[in-house]
Length: 320
Image (cartoon, rainbow, N blue to C red; front, side, top):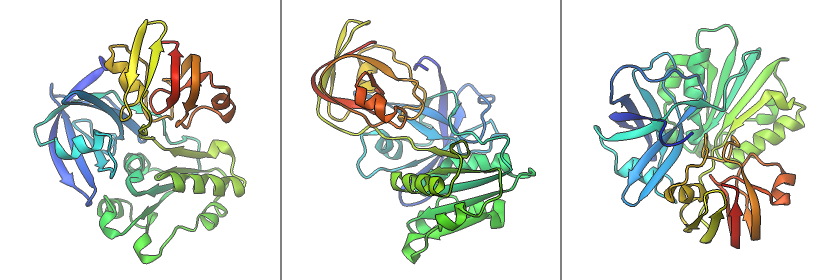
């Protein structure tokens, strides 16, 4: 998906949901309805700042049956490459942005007999729309939502008001923790589990589910990675015959786009594999930060995910 396939939107409302999370309501500049989506979908928000364009993925949290606006929530990152800082500091009601069409890489399984949702912090966002899809249906569901303290529980009142006893809250400040072992070892046949949150939580839920004998097809998670900073390096794009310099605080994909070369992407978070690119030559080490390539593929050094991965090298040649 390229930047040409975007929708112009205007910020119609901004709400401070927690000390670190802002909630944005986006309406189409042209009026009318926005494209349909299902719970678990995300959009890419294009932020054109001074000298830098940021394109960050954010889950849609608004009800899928209401298409007059999209809603997203953005956590202000302590160490921001610029995207979350832009959203928190630069946007005002009336500001205009570009967004991509929704893509769903975290959809609910339609054959599940029960849905167990586990959220940590800002990881609540994809579940907001998913629970709207589930509300009023015949398939049982429950949410387990962990946060640092009550003041960090974005959308708690809205969730409890809408879904009642299906929502269980856990506060680190009170020493509360979801007992994953008990939760995942006592579910009926046909249950699917979905989780989104910090990397440590993701790893723990995956390990617990596997230890409890869950089928891989019944275990689903979403974890968009922000491209980490690293050493500056140069890359040569063989098909385009373009040499690109990648600074420490810019992703390889962003640098490629900045050089005027259109590269494919969907999630920009190392999850979907859409930006997977062939490595023709590398003199040094590829630094893989994605969640898509297998360990063997990473070790082989013939593929890279430019959205989140980079290199520690003197020469890198890509098939772009």
